[in-house]
Image 1 (cartoon, rainbow, N blue to C red):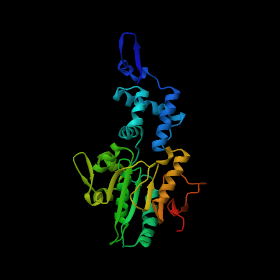
Image 2 (image 1 turned 90 degrees about the horizontal axis):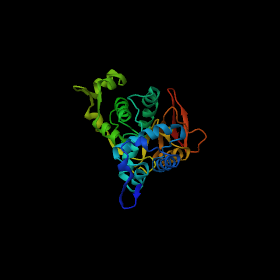
Image 3 (image 1 turned 90 degrees about the vertical axis):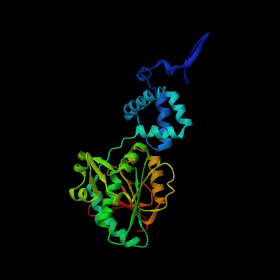
Image 4 (image 1 turned 180 degrees about the vertical axis):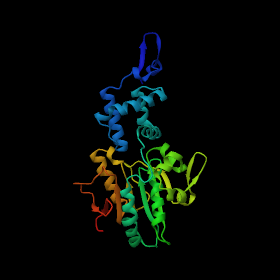
Length: 291
């Protein structure tokens, strides 16, 4: 901890003298330390190009904690729970129901019918929503599966994120009028949501198929094997090494007949991952080798 030292005067943490963290700039060395730590624990990469965004969020954290940059850095090194809160504050959780319609068309007309053939009725179809944010993707998955599966088929969704705040919203399953009415088709809204005073709440018949958990994609999953993994617009923030590590983990956590859906800005082109690209009628997705 930084200290002010004067002979004959008791030393005090320098942070006590700084009310406004703007008075204490984040130098290049400090930025590099934070960037390396974030990359190591989460795979998220802050380049020099988005340093301004990072510094803005970090300074807000420092103001709330009443700490200086290196004080807080040392705190992160010794407190795993604070690391979770730190990553929560840094991440941007931009999502919506039925985002990128082609993904859902592919799921409804191609992927789910194939999963019914390959999995059968002997067990539930297992789906992993990786980087589920505030829950819209997981609930959209549940609605599409509920609409498409034939009688006798069952499914379960494990939805994970690194943001504790987002997971709380997801587990609540409540969304304001402007969000739900804008993004959810009217037929789905009527069937799968209950209208309340200020918004809509997902019905229990959908929520019961989803388990929301905290998970850092840089760590092993330990939740069994999956038939479908959906990870959209998450890996664009990862550096190449971390990106490849996560994809290999997806491969290890998926069954031989499994599918992988990534965001439109994410690609496995020129990467030896064990997944190969399939161009369907409605869009592109990946299948595990051997299908």
